[in-house]
Structure formats: C-alpha cells, structure tokens
Amino acid sequence: MATRRPKRQPKRKAEDQPAAESELNMQINGRLLSGKTNGRAEHMTATVTTTDPPEVAAFWAAIGARPDDQLRRLVFADWLEERAGTVRCRECEGDGDVWDDGGYKYAPRKAVTCHTCSGTGYVSNGYADLAAALRATACKVPFTSVPESGRRAGVRYWSWICELTDDRPDTVTPSVFDSLTGEIVDGYTNWRDYPTAEGAIRDLCAAWCKVNGKGVSA
Image (cartoon, rainbow, N blue to C red; front, side, top):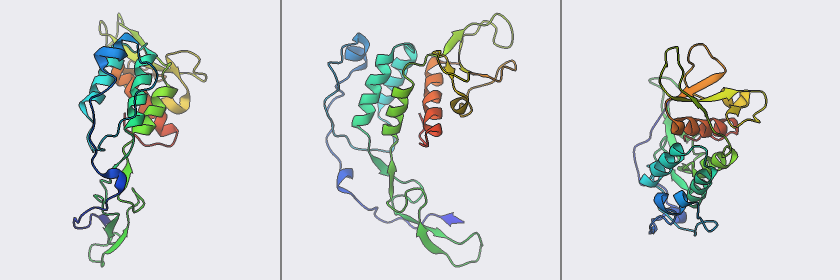
C-alpha cells in the first residue's frame, strides 16, 4: 500500500514562481453583466494555488443567476484559461514519489513514482479543462419548473434530461448523463434534478470533463 514519504522541499519549476496579479479585468458587475467584453481579456500572470480565488465563486453565482446567458460562461472560460497552470500534487505533496510496501504490513518499503503526477510533483489545476467544458456546454440551459404534486410540490428545481440527441438546450446525451450526480425524483430515471441552476451547470461541466477523459471538479 502506498503512503506518503516524509516531507521535503518540493521540486520547483520556473513557471511556479509567484508572480504579481493585477485586479480582475472582467468584473462581474462591469463588462460581464453589461455584455461588453471588447474581445478577449488581457493576458495576466497569476500565482497558481491549491484553492480557488473568490472570483471563481462570483463567476459561478453570476452564471447561476442567468443560466441562459452564454456570454457569462464564455467570459469565465477566458478567465480560467489565462490562469491555467499546475499545483502541487496532493498524493506525494510535490515530492514526485511515494513509499510503497506492496500491501504487506511488515514488508520493506521502497520509493515508487507517484501515479497521480507521474513523478513530476505537480498536476494541472484543472482550469483549462473546465474552460473547455464551459465552451462546449455554453448552449445548454437546464429545464426548470415548479411541480404541482409529488415530493417537490411547490419547489422550483432545475433538470437535465437524457436523450439520444442533445438538440434541445435541456437535453444531454446518455454518455454525459450517466456521469451526472443530480437527484432522481419520483422515479424519473432519465432526469437529474438540482436545487439551483448553478449546481446543474457545474455538474454538467464535471460530467463533460469526465466523459472527455479529464478528471476535473467544477
């Protein structure tokens, strides 16, 4: 069984050195909400961290408030791409390898290459993958209604519907649908329900990344 090696200074790369970050040039209450983006944002170099900056939550909140507005998702995708980079691997804590005893309690342990980062000590922060998912699903808008009966009578919810063709804004193909984590309500197995539009869109992006071979959390 693999365990973490004792901590030591992680391997450093030139691109991981801290860099000053200017203020966000696409403000949620500015160009984003007005629809005036003047093209792509200026390139900005930012320090890659293991936690998302507060702007990420602000973007998601804006997208959830207007799920039918593609511009908000595209602006967020631009913002993410400009900050795509690497973070220290959590499995090996940036060391590049882990201790392995082969699954035997008293077996001698040896250092083996970390399978998560392939020995580099760093992994993608997932921003590039999430940006691709936002663009690919920008035209998707979850179905919303307030049922008059059943367990959710009188409560608004948002849903994705499974169809062989995803020619409607609220439908997704079976391959993506199977990776959704939304709730099944009242026995409708071809529906996935969410309490918020933001949650529905975030889950759709995560499912899209999983289907396309990119393990990123939205």
